[in-house]
Image: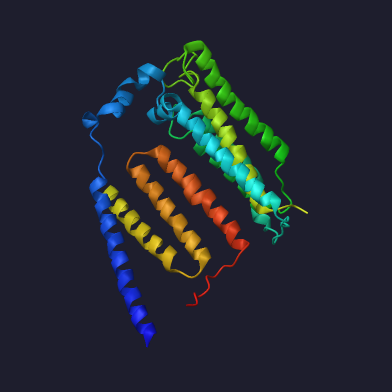
Length: 236
Length: 86
């Protein structure tokens, strides 16, 4: 007797939720349409007008993330590091889970080896060209990690050497902080751009931005790879 | 412009449908795949809004890695949601 009433109420609620979602979806169309660049005000206007002069970076997003707001990026990288460390600590404290699964088929085994190098090349391309084209350290690092994910999925005995992962991560993080300290000592502010800026559109341009983004790419890639290997369990 | 509007409309509708399905289904594997569809459509929308950086992040992390993390968690637990006993 009670059940149909509850069910009916749930169904009415569901319809309301669905209608609300539809309403929100159509409200999104109001936001769509491109921003008129002449109407941009405040800090955004400053970035758009002075980006080339200040950093010589073709990608405004990269110059904001690494140069204007570089300290925030250091915090972001630290948060990611702490998350990976926490997960490793939680997983290593419990009893070890043996890694076992059905073996992958021949096609996957044959195809994934050449694909790994191509995926890593693509990831490296993304973070090396962070100041010229869309993307950067975080995106490229994730792409590199997904290449190792493919290997973890294909070969049941594949294992990431945590010693190398740890070293890569430490050196990358240290590079970031060292460049920041160099800026502090040479120009008086943390992460200041102390290298020559070069010309827009060249690979060796915009000072410390490419170096920092390459360090971030290595850091994110090794962190996520170690995290995935941790989650997969222990090879017996 | 019309084609772009059509793609946008399709993406938004697919996002809403996939999100609703992800909440309502009892099969958690389907739920994970549906939430990855939401991320993929969001990344297409970011690209249409001319934010390629965000679109790449969303495609790599939202649709790629987080789906895999959910799948590992799912493999160590159960695939089907139990009926809640009241």
